[in-house]
Length: 82
Image 1 (cartoon, one colour):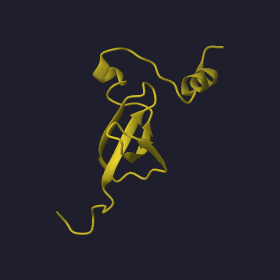
Image 2 (cartoon, one colour):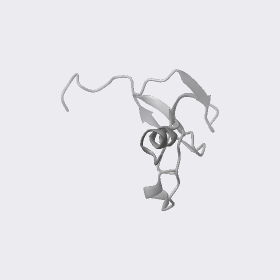
Image 3 (cartoon, rainbow, N blue to C red):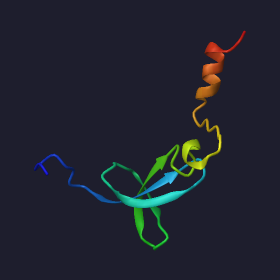
Image 4 (cartoon, helix red, strand yellow):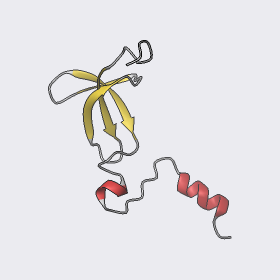
């Protein structure tokens, strides 16, 4: 590995899927401001995701439509049939 190109702040971080409340713990260097208490009793930084492998249609085999930011309505208003 090249020296000086990899982040030094790797730590355990909880990633939480906001569409179904699935969470997993892994090492990451992502910047977070919130923390959460994990199953082992320790407190870890949490990074909120809109979609993960537990909610993505490709991995679940289901055709779920998740619109957390109103993007579909915005698209329909702009390009929908009149």
